[in-house]
Each structure stands twice: as C-alpha cells, then as structure tokens.
Image 1 (cartoon, rainbow, N blue to C red):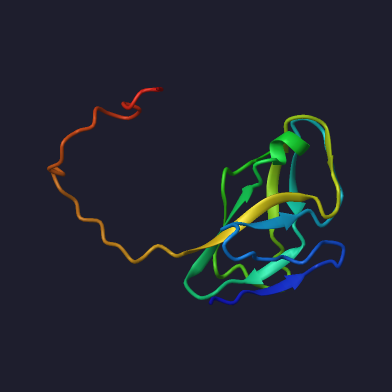
Image 2 (tube, rainbow, N blue to C red; image 1 turned 120 degrees about the vertical axis):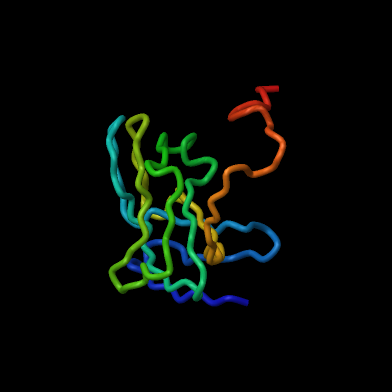
Length: 144
C-alpha cells in the first residue's frame, strides 16, 4: 500500500478519505469561500499539500457535478501535480473559469484526484514507415 504525506492548511475542510473498492478518485474540497462572476478565472484553493509516493504524479479533475452545481470548468482540462510539488506552501488549487455567476463555499466538493505512476523512460525511434494499416485518419470512426 502506498503512503501519501498530507498537510492541511485549514481545519474547516473534511479530511481526505480513500474508500477501498468504491472509487479510484478522491474528493477535494474548496478551502475558502470563492465568489466568481461569469467569465472570471480563479485558482480555487483546495487546502492541501501532499508528498506523493516516489514515482507517482496526481491528476486533478473537476467532479462530474462541479459544472451542474457551480457552473465552473477547469481551465487546463487536467491538472498534473508532479512529485516535486511537495513543499510546505505548495497548496493544490483548481484553476477554474466560471460560466455563470457562482459562489463556492468552504468544504464544497469541487474536484477529485488520483495518483498515477510516472511514465516509464522511453526512446523515440524515427522511421520512414510504421508498417501498420491506416484507420482512415483523425476522427474516422464517425459519430454513431
């Protein structure tokens, strides 16, 4: 079992929990109240810093209900936290754009994360042909 050292920046958010067998993602909560106007960008503080296990990175995404409940989308599609982002002041944040006026309250579940093993070392080998059958180009599988 891997261990993650975690620092909380506030006692106003619930502690992170991992429920074995229930989900591969762990919820993250807003650690401050954030008001946003439509079109506004903010880094929403998540109230935690972590030291990930060696050889892992974290992927941060909005929860499936974040847009419905708060009208926010993640500005960078997927947040990647590498293993070196583990200092005492390296608080995780969600870069968000408001699609409507909204208020996010302390302890609201707005994001989720999972840890993933780092990519193995690779070497690119340049070739004239890959020698495989073409699938028909980008987007060739249609819409139905």
